[in-house]
Image (cartoon, rainbow, N blue to C red):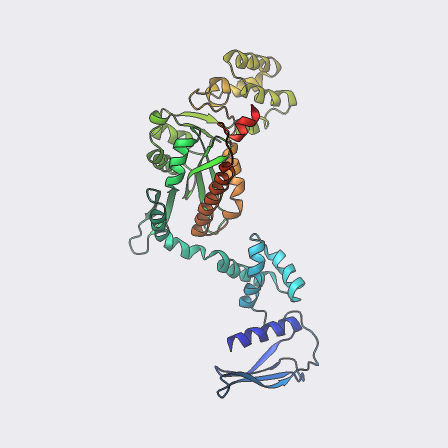
Length: 406
């Protein structure tokens, strides 16, 4: 009977008619067109002899006008029709959904109705955001079972007379840790990204770079906001997974996130740290607009010797004293190659590896927490498998991108 009701609902919406239930029982259904004097009628019942539902009466004739707002197009029906559309267009907006329903089903719906139906459909596709927080511990346990020696943990906020509240989680897969330590350059980029779901929060990430200049994700966590406390928590766990800075000589690069500098000094006081020059430059050009001065920031950042850097800065001092004084606020070891640590053998002056990672995961950042974490994990697995397959047929002693330069 439920299948028949769904088919009948589709029919009424497509035809643009309103329905009137005369009899709506478990084994009997009599429906008529709600329009006055319209003869359309159907009667269906359970035929015990043939063991199926049977249409006994059907007057298939409408004398009423079409209505583009059928009462059968309720929230559940609309949500069921939007699911396929959401699978193709995850960021579907209410206005777009309204146009889709008019084009595909010839039915007009108001904004509030379509917004609620879209929310229901999105929960059917990606899960309920509130309910998933209650399953975080189970998800982290599954990570421990499927990826032994991985770090996957969470913290909660106890409530005296209620269920505890989720506070933060941290995930670092053992395979990623081992691969980074054994095969990647000792430079780690750190960045934070806003999550676009109903409950907000931020995603903090640690991203490295492999020998072929591809970004390599080491760890990520979900925290309430970006501050000294959350960065300190993240860096402490990251150091536990990767080992001490003094042991491996890790270097870091970031975009001057809130609280990050203080957290680094507390957790990793001996770590060499760089600031992304692009971030410095964007703040610089807010004060200094001339093209020559803007270009000289990059020239100074790319200098590889002390003499070259000092000469570049003296040139800037003569051209624009204010610009020179602005850059004097930054320790040269934070933004120019000439003062970088020689240990990592990496001369990156921008945090592009984190920016690329951010661009790849934009579509995941609006999903509920477990759906997002699982999508991130699966994406990283696919990425590793793709790179492995490409290198299986490669026989050079150096990475392809380095060999190509030579």
